[in-house]
Length: 94
Image (tube, rainbow, N blue to C red; front, top):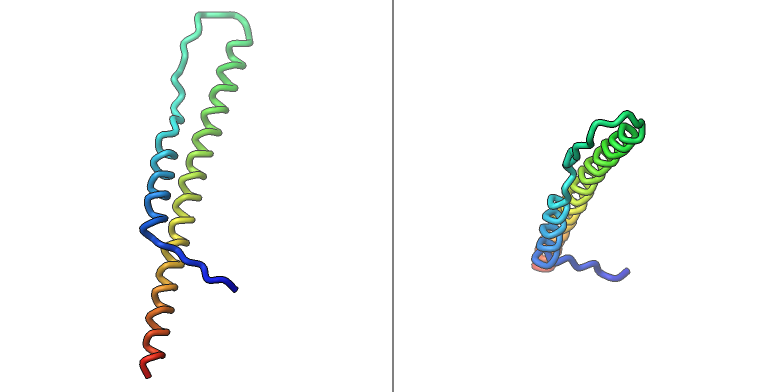
């Protein structure tokens, strides 16, 4: 099985950039004001827009969680690799 090598210095800026891009995602509704209308279309458009921004906010939260989970897993992987390397180093000195 080939060895998996993770260099934290290479991975960390990528995740930092990803988190920055996710945080730049604007999920706020600009609340456009429509003129008074008796048409039901305006109400439907507003409902659709509200649903859209709610979905975008949930999507952003999921992206942030996925980024955080992935970074946590990479940190755990690096910690385990370092621990294994230290244990292997101790074993070869005997």
